[in-house]
Image (tube, rainbow, N blue to C red; front, side):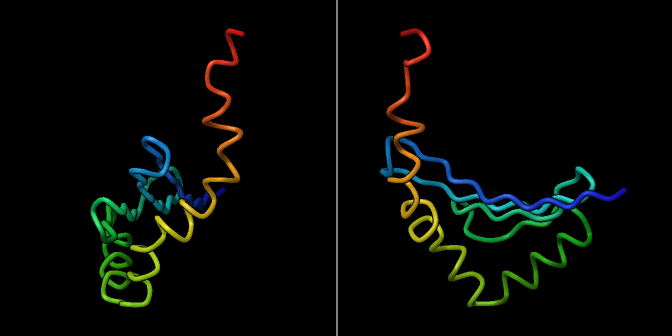
Length: 94
């Protein structure tokens, strides 16, 4: 049995003041390739991942989309998730 997984993550620090977008592609529990908005390009961790990173990094349309994902994906969705994350802090002990 094979497992393939991709994730898109938004990391928020101090609301939307500092936002980080991370996209990961994982195959059989091994991360092949990853994009981190703090780095600004894809990084490959396996031979296949290195090839994908090289191809994706050389495509200006893909790179523009990933580099702007902090705004169109993360910040855009922040208001929808805020009630379930930021405003619930401290409710456990109440």
